[in-house]
Length: 113
Image (cartoon, rainbow, N blue to C red; front, side):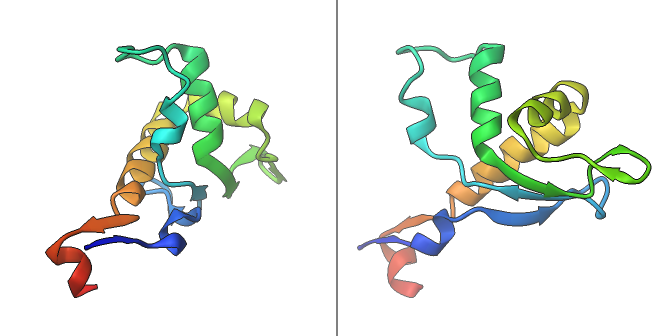
């Protein structure tokens, strides 16, 4: 049996491990995002990574431009965060990959759910 959980394909709010006042709305990683990569390309260029990161990170809470001004979650700002806070970028990619694993189940696992 093959089971696809449509709800699991939706972005989910996840608290950032290093600062729980920061929440990130993360979309599950999908092979769709890799279809446009050149065949056999193992490493993403910075442009490819930026596009992927912007697709996976949908929104955020708790990221500020200054002490009292929230930073809007635009693609430009996402790239700024990814460039200067690699720990957040790594967290987003890791969690997106974890979420991907919850979308489909095969065999015995699917029949138990």
